[in-house]
Amino acid sequence: MQTEQRSILAFVACVAMVASVAGIADFAHAQQAPAYVFDPAWPKPLPNRWKWGGVTGLAVASDDTIWVLHRPQDLSDMELIAERSPPVAECCVLPPSMIHLDQAGNVIGSFNAPAGHGMDVAADGYVYIGQDTVRKYDPRTGAVVAEIARTPEREGGGRVGLPSPSQRSPGQGTMRHAEVFMPAAPDNPEDVDAARAAARAFRQKYPPETPMIVGGLEEIRIVEEDDEIYVADNYLGGRVLVFDLATLEFKRGWGAYGKPLAEISIDDADHSYTPNRAMAPDFVGHLTLNVSRDGLVYAADRVGNRIHVTTKQGEFRDEFVLAPGTGGGGSAGGVAFSPDAEQRFLYISDRMNNKVWFLDRRTGDVLGHIGSTGENGGQFFGLHMIAVDSAGSIYTGEVDSFRVQRFVPGDSERGALLLRAAELP
Image 1 (cartoon, rainbow, N blue to C red):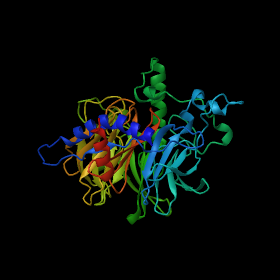
Image 2 (image 1 turned 90 degrees about the vertical axis):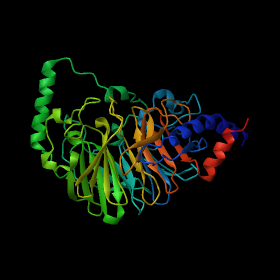
Image 3 (image 1 turned 120 degrees about the vertical axis):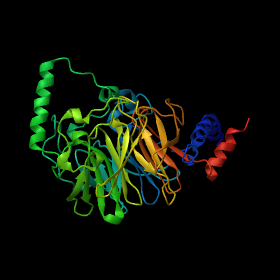
Image 4 (image 1 turned 60 degrees about the vertical axis):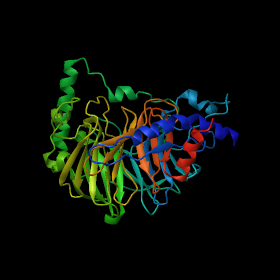
């Protein structure tokens, strides 16, 4: 107990300051950002000598339990010493990729699935994971029970279908994230020309209106009242695709500004963004999304530093620009909503700037933020995923610091307790 109290006191002083930053904004639209406090006692340490890998999916289920999709293969040999024969240290061993947590931060379930990106949980408990397509998993057995149709090949190559166990190579590490989001240009002009020709050929074979998954998956969101599942396919900078939740059949889709799928450009120049310049005519990359209670779809074009607002049918309503000077991986990451009935606020995770931004959902105005770059509690390094429970607590997942964190409302009982603890000598 004393150890936990010392941990709380050590972290809360810093976070109380961060929370106050989130609450100072009172811009022209008289909307004030909510205040949040970092919760240092959540989650509890993982059992079974497990260690988190990079977090690539996060969802709060209807019962307010939390599902975390992470990449055990991100862990290096040094982090998996206990797997050696004989082991030379107590920790760690390769964990399952799906971990289920309760509100107290205890592990209450898990299963293994190949690496993925984006996930959601239906009211009936089935877990949907974005891999090379969307697969529906039975959480009790970890078995695949259904999947959305996809093309039999991927642009630029790459595996289609699930790997066999023999193809998995745990513990080798994949710490190359800077190269992924800030790649160096190829030096050989002939290689550039060959890549462009191959891309043109693939895109002519699978045009933008292809009614199945073509690229990789970025995000999944289930809308129970419509019996639909929204999918962000990363093909051509990002396509919003909607499927029937029961049959997994394609229903509709759109691109940037609500344009029909067939009108999405296959020219890379139309999917390019330069910081502080004009917005691109098509999505730029790493599209995520979420759907509000009043039927609006918020598609965050991370590399394009913007969020597009449409109806569920794809009718364009608005564009919110966020930190437009951000380069590299961009600013507009995951999308979540405040828990009030009107969902007055958008919560946007920003990987490059390592902040959770609070936006007025009506106007798109930035009202404040929490977080800064670092690896102390309440800071972020590689902020990737975000989710919110019914009480308003924010859950975050990092892909570079390999951790999940929780922030509780400052006006909650737990938030008030943590703030009082910060005032103790």
